[in-house]
Image 1 (cartoon, helix red, strand yellow):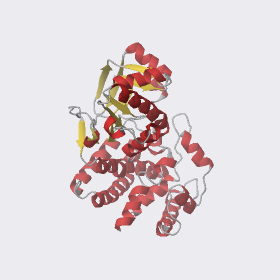
Image 2 (image 1 turned 90 degrees about the vertical axis):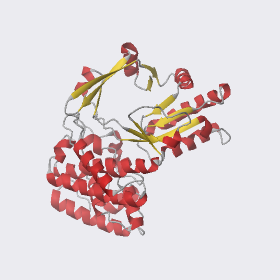
Image 3 (image 1 turned 180 degrees about the horizontal axis):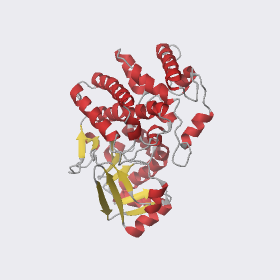
Image 4 (image 1 turned 120 degrees about the horizontal axis):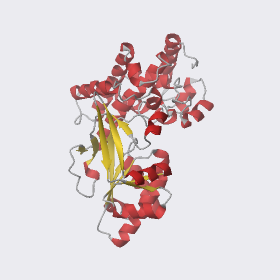
Amino acid sequence: MVFIDINKNLIDLMNQHKAYKVIIKGKKEDILEIRNVRGVHYDDREKVIKEMLTASIVAVSAGQTALPGIIRYIAESLAMKYKTDPGCSLDIIIAENIRNGAGYFRKELYRILGSSFPVDRMAGLIETSIGKMVPLMTLEDLEEDPLQVFAEPYNTLILDQKGFRNPVPDLPWLAPKENIKAWVDRKSYIHNLGHAAAAYIGFLKFPGKTYLYEILEDQEIRIAVRDTMLESAGVLLQLYPGEFNLPELQLHIDDLLGRFQNRALKDTVFRVGCDLMRKLGPDDRLVSPITDAVCYGLPFEKILFALTCGFYFRAEDETGKYHPADELFYKNFTPDIEKLLTEICKFDHVKDNHIILKAKDCCKEINARFKPGILIH
């Protein structure tokens, strides 16, 4: 297994040790040593492309800002592969928190390779719904071992069965799905939404708390988060009536709330809530279910309350710093909820006026109930 990374120190260490550790944080701690690994630095273009030419599967998990450069490397390797072995194909697991990831990759690959290139024959574009929670590593943990990774025990990777061009690997922890869009939306509308609701409502009530489990020890917060997730589950049932049912979604929500309260994992409120421009954006975990709820005439007030709480979010990392993307968000911040909803969430002044009015009521409740340091109206 070959890792491509921009961090030269990590690549050098991986090539030195040929292994790394995954520490499973649950009721008991398990240590998995992953062997037979090596690394290539991202800037070594020729080596990166050579590795992809000889690989059977490429998995991409680097964050949205890194994707354009990565896709260009993939495009170059596909072009070379087409010349040398036009009958083979490369499966690409898109392990990113984006909706319609396959569509994004396909569009970019066609833009680079040209409309006549057989992208859909040469590349299997496999969307995923990643549920495994991995906390931010502390400076102390990284000093102890820069290669170690902490993770929760949950170990199922949901992915698009129809995306593969080669046989789906026969691995017990893979869960191929026919309708991957439904499962990607389940992750966003339930898991990601629950994380956001816990972080944003919890921060207002407990601005000094560091860990997610501390927030959810409060019964009022826990009930509010569960109710918000259930409201969004109602939207999923309308979107995908043949894929999900209410008892299954309720079990999933309660399982997630238990996993959110994993004390050993030490997942932080900062990690779960930061990167506000993306998480409060029009295609993400809070705005999308509100938009769909409006289309179906379903309630959305609890989701909107969590969204509104997000504008008050000011959590810092362990060094007392904001997330880099949030620095810009706070610099250009306006305390006018209507401007925030129209400029960041992309709600319409006229068509979505009823949402804006409800959000103003949310601000009144938040200002009265939590007495935050920021006054939004």
